[in-house]
Length: 391
Image 1 (cartoon, rainbow, N blue to C red):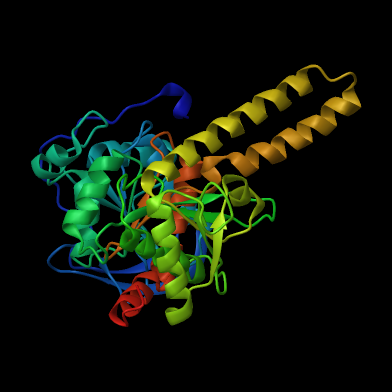
Image 2 (cartoon, one colour):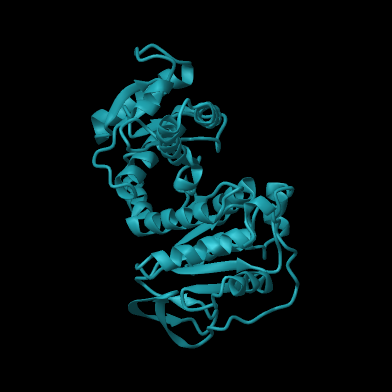
């Protein structure tokens, strides 16, 4: 099987127009390789795509990522095989390439795996804005457009992050002035902490930080089912006067929001507190958040290497087996594939950003997270909160 180790790149899309197989028919929903629960779907006469008020449809950029389309297709198939919720995965991209990958693993296109032909591909070398403007029929741009058009409940891509963000913010309605990227961090408690923002916004003002806090809290409550999530503001100390001007002014605003709107603000948290699990939501600007994220990734890799060296130099077989168990547990805790993707919060639709080097396991997890977010009512909750003037 082709995989990440082969470093397969996106294939070039041909320009032929291919009509989707599902036009105008009524089909039954099923899990590939499993009988599943039968559920009725209708398809649009105009688009030929599944239409349903209950089934979640995920528009997946099958051409985005270092190992696309092979790992994207395989991850999508894995997700469909393992889910009994009946989601429909829309695989956008070169239809010949996608169907070839399906054929290679013995799977046919079906009611839950629908190929949506597109004629262009956004690469990692493309300038984000130029890609959005110049490649409107790319799998990346079209995945977001399908959410806007109501043809999908969520968009997912492991492709060019900048282009995906621009497509999302310019195609979908921005619910706040500065949408932000949220990432899950492992903690000592076994429960993840959500850090917002980790790179979308370098220069922020206190109102932007307030939006990050509200978005993160709503995501934690709806998508992750954390009741009354604790919100902390990342700083260089716990005392009220700590931090730069942005942090101090944001602290005052958060305190006011706690009194007026019930934000469960617990005050400042330091970098080590993130991993201790003191807060469920950690708020910072995108510059600080990205430094925290990259530093955590580097420290995680260092910890793995040090433990691997201990395994190699174990004095006996018993010690080696014990260390190997610890290494496997640590690797799972730090593996980005366990999280699968980072949601872009603050746009009027579910958008899940995956790591460019995602393998089939990370793709499967990311699609799962996108489906969970779409099903959670997160977007409606944000809309209601903003309408009520609580952010």
